[in-house]
Structure formats: C-alpha cells, structure tokens
Length: 93
Image (cartoon, rainbow, N blue to C red; front, top):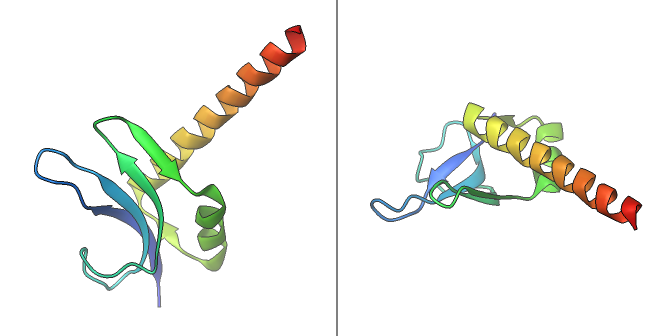
C-alpha cells in the first residue's frame, strides 16, 4: 500500500487553508488521512510542518507531492537563515 504526503484543502471559498496530510495513495482527496503533519496558509504565506513526523514518514516510504517538497525546502531554508542570524547576534555580544 503506497502512502503519499499531500495537501488537503479545508478553507472556505476565497480563503484557502491546506492541511499537510499523510494518506493512502488510492484514497479520495477528502478521505480520512492517516495523520495530519502540518498546515499551509497561502494567503498569510505561513507553513507549520512537524519536520520530525515528515522525515519519519519519508523513512517509512511515503512519497511527498511536488508542492509539499517545495514547502519543506522553503521551511528548511528559512530555519537555516534564522539560525545564522541568531549565531551572528550572539557572537557579537
């Protein structure tokens, strides 16, 4: 049974909000997910993703969609920049 990590829309009309979910590949889009691992709001441009759960599912063989891959890369890049800023601030003191 193949497992996918993909987006599931839950917002109202003209107010999209997406859950990042783990589902069986053959389930319907509105089907019950195995696990919700994050939320993406494209209007506010926020991504809340549990990175540990994401990486755990990848190790189990789940295949992320292209959009979820790009959101993950964006989140990792953002965290890396935040760490660099924090180290730069603390090293000056």
